[in-house]
Length: 379
Image (cartoon, rainbow, N blue to C red; front, side, top):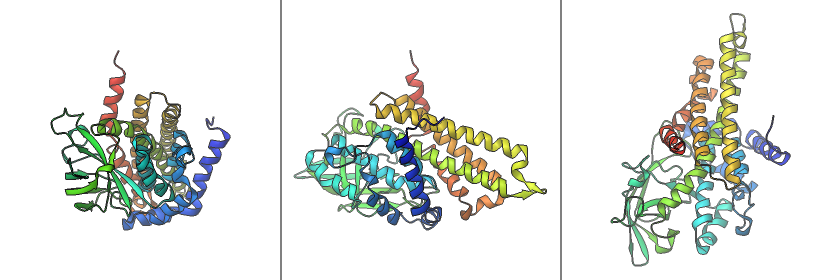
């Protein structure tokens, strides 16, 4: 049974067709191997108008739903979760400006984002603030007509890409309670006083993740998003959309891992027959596909509820938990099915596997998702 309507099916198929014909697996593989941001593909997607998808019509966008966005994320991640990250991070960060930005900020940033002229990145974590994001120590103080930022941020995906504006969580009131002294500043990545360094991580090689050192980095006073002290509200609202996006992308990448493993099993001959004929392989692939289908349904449920404006923090965490662990599991099993060939970049499975190892950490660990789910089960 397909739970999508005709319009959604057409949209899903369009994304798949563009990924196959206009982007391709070889391009995604090359960006990963060379640790190069996918600028060429980003420009293609921008020209297609897909960056406009979630932006409301009254602000110049297409006014699409979160479900439409989830279908796009699923398709963009077909050949690798990291590739989709370039588009997901920009889009779900831009939505913070849609929801909390002033009219001047929306006018300044959104048209340029939809054209592909600028990108966005989100900066939450620090060396001492990962899962405990409210422990943010990076300080921002108003000085005349500008904010001065001092501190260190970590794991900021896409922050080093050209023409990127970083939505940075900072502490603007050191005397306020832990969750109440936080704010979000819009920080162009070429701001004076910023030192952004790409990290040589196992995964996230193309989009890149970074550490940021701010030594009296200066941004205009008007770059405060929302009001001072609203940082925790903005970030918690942001994380719901982020987790729907990444969960959909995990499913898209996991499906390709299963498809690649199935194709290899049908083509690889050992002991005079394709290895798919061996029950141990057939059952393994059956379990892999079942897990992917279950993850997809959890993601579609969360995306559907969010599209309707329903409270869905538990459903989003369930989707993020199950989809990330599914990607990790099926890519590990895919490595086993492909055997020695899985170790080669040209087989792609090792790239999927590396992204799977990151999936249960980034965007909120599996342990954090289980904590959120457990809290929702209290009587």
